[in-house]
Picture 1 (cartoon, rainbow, N blue to C red):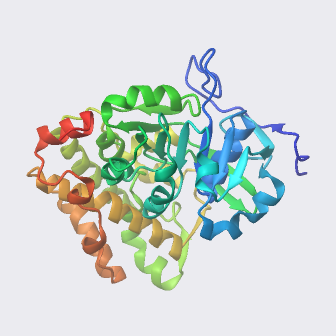
Picture 2: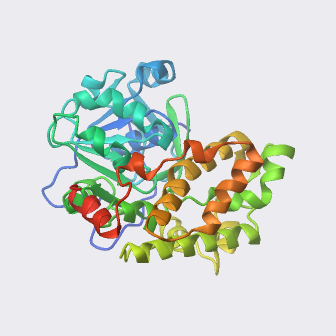
Picture 3: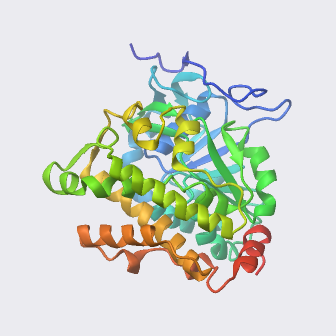
Length: 395
């Protein structure tokens, strides 16, 4: 039975770290007001869960996608299905403070601005929001993909004193239909950092009031490279089965189809990331296996056995969806990481080869489209200069 509008119902309460409440709220500190940017699966889930938890939430969508926002506008909110797995422990109808395609209205009084869309759409939101930002706001790229460094120089053109931040992954596995969203599982662990890194601690104090699962890392290379990004393992798992997914069956049960060979590619990719982390002096390296164990509370002796036993095994990934997420990994994680490593005198032969193999299989020119150190504002820097920049914001 669907919940009655306006009457949230209880869901199972999430397991959280010792000493924290389910919502992570510290004594006498109210949760921040949110502006959630993007009304897709993730944005709708964030808006609904946080609104049901008592936060003041505005939902913003780009004007050209207003039609897709209409059902939420008509009802004034979003329904979170009763069998969802929310962070704040409630389901039902979540009424939102504002639902709009007007950036000025959306950002009014917001303390945290969450950009919840895939990396290729980050700049579309930034460009329309930038002139309306206000002093003291935190702009969080919920799935990092170097969102901070890609927009740091654009921030220099903004009059407001704003802090950029990024998390390595979205808080949920979820889906949306119209004005209803279902959270299959909320993630039990993800990381956050600010740019510059010397603001990470103050940003963390605010964001943990929304999600107690946040773990602070020192800087944005820790949230991207050391944490593995999203994590960016879609390419590694897809390469051994690409012909079936892109040619024969047009998709498949991605996690139950995991192969030993795909698992070995993940391990090789992880080893190259770990080498780059050592060059950067980072102590935050996290393997893909550790990420899945902590984020989903799954277990297995290796990544393949873990994924084959996970709750994801019946999830069907279409060829179109898989192409999008693999391209996001390649363009915004693999290519900038490989080029940065080479700038610092290291090689990542497996990761570089995966980009080239995927480009050959799909007939794409990824090296021409991928994010470069120049676009990140770090071209030509040695290790010392790079660490100074990402920590202090100065060149």
